[in-house]
Image (cartoon, rainbow over all chains, first blue to last red; front, side, top):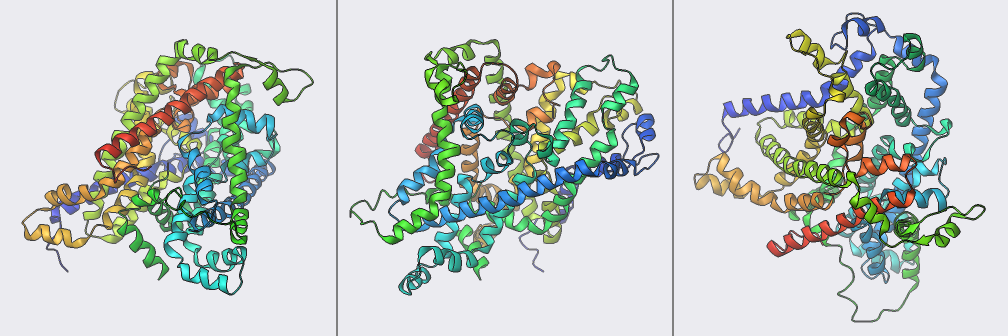
Length: 298
Length: 340
């Protein structure tokens, strides 16, 4: 093996130690939160949060199981929003990306401006809120969770760049000579050979939807439409109350009745994290593909 | 085969920097007036869903900004649009109100200062890490580190706020347990403003460093290996190679990240400031409030909507100006690195 142009052995060890520590800092909080979620209430009350709890208990997960109607409803909303949103988003993004990638398209200049201007200027949170609630009627609608996140100019540019650089014009020209319309060229030629970029966009969207709590906090009050993230977010409100007023005039009993126990919250956080933690190492390469094609995701 | 083409393409384009530039607006081929063909109609239809989306979710809100210039009063029994148009024009009064309010200076200072620190650290730390990780011997270990460091990117700030809470909880949190163990007084984290600039900066770096490192690493692996071979022959050590080859090679992508982040200098990562601090408690208000938390809180409370819209509009305009300015300055210095 050629070690000619490489760092010194000691430097290598040093770098490895640095990365080992940073890597651990990045994942240890998850492990810690998991340990809290399997601690017994008594252990938490007496000894606080510990990496190795004094007493283990699955009571948090039993509690969640007993509350499974609420949890499953939230899970259902999360999955529904993620799947629908990803499908809609991928469709609208790739079709626009394809239209922009065609050199002779007469509206190319116009569409490019349409996509580009929002990257530089947008109406801001309030104007979007006002329009979405008052004109589009999205308050307390599942579409409020889906539509606003479906498209981003950045994703369109990724797909456009991909189509432009990887699909040979000759294929499309020959299909046109055979009498294919642009729709069938798109569905039957472009989509099958563009799987990597479609996977990338789909993953960006999947994670964006799965992790979204902001849309829900703005638009959703109906408890049937609460997603997992929003559920976790709503539970935070109680903690905030405690944090602001540590000596609020509540009896211990009221306090306990009103709040889910500590370990239950941590268990919900784990429920959200686990699917991601299991899935993403397999999809990481598509992420890297995406962020190197587009160079950056804001 | 396809994938190799793809990889080759990034390498050629130095991490994709030129790709943003490939947004050419069709200026060059206006010479011949083209006829509208069936193909154009079909492509127009393909682009239609996204076009409608942009019309509804990007351009309609821009139009909705006129609310910031109005004294919005709901006219009972009429639609929103009717009320909006019939409300009285007040010119820049709402903006004046926001800019002259007590909060304005504090919000401006917090948002901009936090962002400056984030931008500097967001370049220094990931670039250093990317160079380091590209040098370690084992490619397998490098992949494992990348995977672990990429992980925080996939967490929402709500989940992260629980992670932070596990460490900072005043009674049970790990940090206070350790403080008690070593004989120091426990700290009431969520009501002690002086720690929060550090905590927020740490969390921002924690969440984004791995991701940015991977972006820069992709650019570093695209550098032509023969440059390094030539450097070895000239007697450059690894450190000199990093300074004179690696850094100049990744300069375009670093500048691009820089412009994009400078462009967002009046925006803040809402989740970071809102969730990690447990929804901006009063005791931390002046330390951790940014434009976004201010606007969000105003939106959730009874503050008149046109005043909030003015604050939000101010932020959007300021951002638009900074991104154009940053791009202009970069294009003067190094026209290849500008993004527009």
